[in-house]
Length: 505
Image (tube, one colour):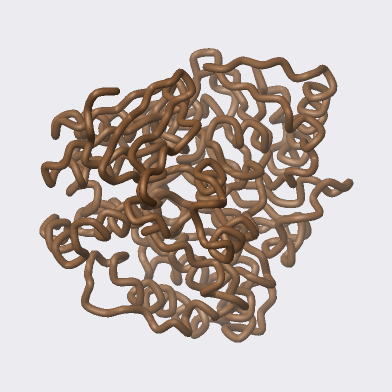
């Protein structure tokens, strides 16, 4: 590794890094992926507790029917036929409910079916429902790589359409607005800022088709690594990069914590752009560019509970539940530290077999402000680098676990008695394992009021440095995969690369 000069060195083995590595290796480039943790995969990582597998970030996938966009990207990457998947409930892959309205509203697969399943709850709103699914498709069509095409570019005005304002003009029915936006935890929806295109790109592929990964999303990592090695790419874990060496305004190598110098002609950072620039040093960038990236607001972080259940205690539900205290709460991600916390959450059941009858596990995710754990931010703890956090931190976690379970039990009476073990992750867990600023969920905030201010180009201001991952383009499995193609097109040419990917139907 020290004596070899790679064509491309990739720092970080999240989906963006691994997908980029395969794309470039398939083009005959020598590629090396470097991962600081014991486990490859970033948000694709899983962990096991009491012989139960939990996902850290992949709770379901969309667009995986043959011919759909993620299917075609994964087919090009060589992994689609080997995935172990369970299709979610076609008449309600997601369910939305509220504290003051106990009705459970379905989000169904298929555009016509989506309208059909909601229409009984909103019989006067068929026009609005039909318009909504049309607008989803029209908005996504403006992003050519979403459809694996370079035929046209989006109208920049679409970036400034606010999501909450869109729903307000779509219908006067406050309840329907909340139901359609009820899965906003997928993108940390902020009523003042979130653009409608973020909503559309986040939810559209699930309406097309929705699947869970059997025994977790880490299978995606394993398949990607296998495919990378098939094309002679290399990947090294336990290799934390602490410095970038620059000569004549170009990066010549990265330096690992244990002193290795990994040389390359080009470099892709799959870690947080803010952290990348900090590691390289302010002096290597124009002041305005460096300051703009550092000042970008990041999305909020999360608190998650992972529940191992008693055998045959809770029937398995083949969908996700999204809960908010009130209709307005779907557009709020902050101020959740008070008595109402958690004011919204997503609940997902793990699947270990195709014919699942009872749930083995439940994962619940809610928002948490990083400030709640700031007093422990000087501590660090992962499987590879263990560190002790004081008893007050453990007490904090247990208190939050209990409050979270109490809230979920309002929807699942008797849940607590069905729990064998309960574990939790905080913003610090996400920061330490994923390596993102303040443990943020989805990279930097997209703001409909200032749409271009928050744009980070995949090609940096250093000639041979590129970015990929959720901090650059869109988040999520589909968004990050598309982002990897965008990054690699900077090296290979967009028309050339998309033509090759587009051959996969």
